[in-house]
Image (cartoon, rainbow, N blue to C red):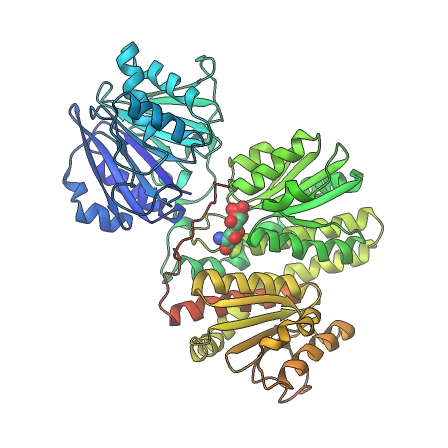
Length: 606
Ligand code: AGP
C-alpha cells in the first residue's frame, strides 16, 4: 500500500531517490518523507502531500547524500499527519526506518519500550522498529544483529528499509509478506517496493523472499535469512518491461493512456504460449472443484469468466471475492483455485491462496507483474505481459485478463468436446479482430462519450444494468465510475431491478444499460424489458447497443450505437465504453484521475 525506495551510490543520490519514489507514488500518496545520510548524520524530512510537493517544499534536492531512503504513504495506523509520516527515527537519531505492512503486536512492543524510557512521536505501528533497533544495538554494538533480533520480535507483515549512522554507506532491508526487491545497477544499488523504483537505472532485480533481509552497499549486496542468519543465494530476475512504457507519452493521464494501450495488450495476450494455456485448461479439467478468485476489479474479471466457462466450455465455475474466500469455499486436494491479480501483491488474494494451499489444493494465477508474490506462490502462473499499469484504476490489465480467460475457456471447451475445432478457430479469429475494433471505437467514439459524460457529469446516482455476461460488464463499469469520479454507481443484473431497486428510479437516478447484440434474442429482449420498466417510470436511460437497423427508435434518452461485432467480443466492446464514460465523467468533475482519493494501487493489507 505504501511505496518504499532506497538508493546507495558513489555520488549524490537525492535526484535518483526523488525519481524512484515519484514512480512509486501510485502505491500511496497521503504523505511522503525521506532520510538521507549526511556524513554521519541523518537528515529527515517528511510531510503531508505528494512526492513532488514535499521534495520541493522541504528543499530535499539541495541536500547532498550518497545513501537515502524514501517513503510514500497510504495510511493504515494513524491519521494523515506529519507526525505519522515515515521515516521514523530512534530516540538517539541513529536509525531511520520506512515500512510497508502492518505490525499486529505493535501495542505490546510499544508499551514495553515506553516502560524502558523510549519516547514515541506518532500513532503508527512502524515507530516501534527504530526504537527496537536502538535498544538491541545498545546491547550488542552490531547493527546487523540488532536488526535480526528486531525482525524476530515483529508479528504481522513488513517490507522495511533502514539506514543507520553506524554504517553510513549501507542500506538494510527486510521482508515478510509485503513486496520488496533489490535493483542491482553497476554504480547504484536500490531497494524498492516494486521495480518502478529503479527501472530507469537497471533491469536487474533480486526479489527478497519472506523471512529474508539484505544489506546493500554501492558495490555489493548480500541476502540472508533472519531466522538462521545464513546467506541465501539469489538469482537475478531480468525485468522485461520497457521503462518508456511507464511514462505518460503525451496522454493527459495514465488512465487514458492505458485504455488506449488495450489493442496492444490484447495482441500480446493472443500471442501467449498456447501450451501453457492448455496446461492450465488441463488442470481445470482434472480438478473436481474449481474456483475463480479475485477482489475488486479482478473479482469482476472472475465473474465475467464464470459466464465464459459456462457458455464456451459447458462447465460452471463459481467466482468468489478473495476477501470472502476462507469463509465460503470448500477446499481440498482435488480443488483448483485460479486467481486473478494485476499487481500480484493483493493481501486478500494471497490469503485465499495460502488457505487453499494449506488444504492441499492446486493453485494458479493470471498475473501482470512478474516476480510478484502471487506469481511465485502458485503452482501455475500465466504472466499476462500487459506492461506497467500506473493508474490506480485498473483498465488494460483487467481487460486483458478477460481476453486470457476467453482463450482459456475456449481451450477447455475443446478439451471437454463442448466446442469442435471449427468453432474454436472461428472464436480465435473473432478475438484477432478485437484489437482493430477497439482501436476504431477509441478513435471514433471517444468524442461522443466525452460529450455525454460531460452533459451528465452532475448526476449523482447511476444504475448500471446488464444481463448475462453484460452483468459483470455493468459491475466493472460501475466500479470504474465510483473509484475515478466518486459518483455513486450501482451495477445490477437487469432481472434483479424489479425486485426492489426500481423504487429508486426518479429524476435523480440515471441508468446506463449494456445491451447485447439483437442476434442474442432472448438476452436482448430481456434487457430491453428492463429498459421499458425504467422508461415507464419516466427514468432516464443511456443505452449502449449495437447497430439494430432502427429498431427501438426513441426507447433511450441517449444512445451510443456500436458497429456489429461477433457476440464473443461484444461485451468487451461495451466495457471500453464503460471505462471511457467513467474517465470523461471524472475529467469533467476535475477528479484526481490517476490517484483517486483514499485508494492505492496494490492493497497489501487485509
Ligand atoms: C481496480 O480498479 C481497483 N483499483 C481494485 O479493485 C483492484 O482491482 C483490486 O484491489 C485487486 O488488485 P489486483 O488486481 O492488483 O489484485
